Length: 254
Image 1: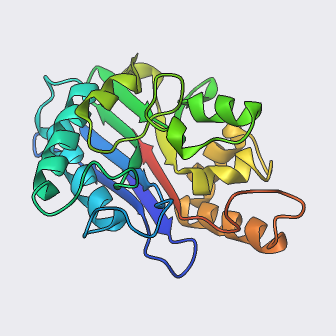
Image 2: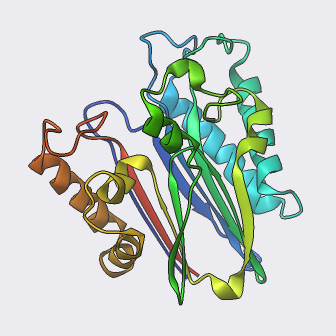
């Protein structure tokens, strides 16, 4: 089995992405978790810890639950992890603040027979088979952007988009599914800062992205993203919210 990952901050701010994988001692499977922290829309968030702390706590809790409790579905694992993380700082932080730390989530768990997945918000999961790459997307945010500006007030609302914050119930909004392991050869995850090579710059499609990850590795893939950003530093040719964003790429060959 091959597992590789690369993660780089988009600038001088601390990296708000999290990525980790676990292989149980039994050797029967494994789990992968990738989070992309939401940069706060305000200077104050009500949290004394910050987004990097939040994604590390949430990601670690989710990875533990997903890898050690195979009988619990990934959505329930996420729900429990959100609750556990909220409890860890409810005494010190104002969790009702609108800018309390949030994150997008991708989780994958594989065993001898199946590969389970969960996607919440705009990170991208690629499942590679003999037929090519299947992109598993939570496209609610993308569909909202097609209609016009997306407001912060639309986060975690019925007709808006969803990210993991303090409400365990948001886990039920995630895109989930299961594939036979025999049909999945490769698993890859890209936070939106890495997926912009496809979604913003159009340098390749999802098949090309998966091929590049397999042939060159995640570190080289992130380097390609940085080169594309550097070639258009002001976003004149390729408009985007941030000139350079935190970028994480993960590859697992089963």
